[in-house]
Image (tube, rainbow, N blue to C red):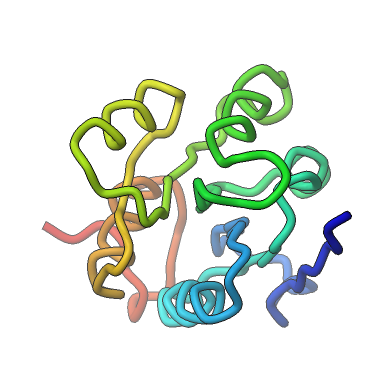
Length: 151
């Protein structure tokens, strides 16, 4: 049995136009790196280490984006994205795979499973931020310091 551990950024209580991002990652160091990237972008976020609760958390909080590891205990990220895409409340939420699987075949399989984009570990934090910017571009009003739509 796996324990669920999750936390939400301090900005949770603010009603703002900042995007809410759900990050699902079972390694604490990777989760810390993702939370740092999200904080630097000015995003609100929920970090979670349990794949089994991902669909329930996504249904409850309706994040604007999900960052999902593939190699998770319990259900794999591929299983989770399939569940998300089958649920009416979560089927339109974009999902980015953040994974150690780096071959061309892995990438094709992951994108075919329903992910909107893919980044392989190890990655540069700037690359993750750029991918988040692309996926969320034009959907939110951000503070000028966190302008996400840059040419």
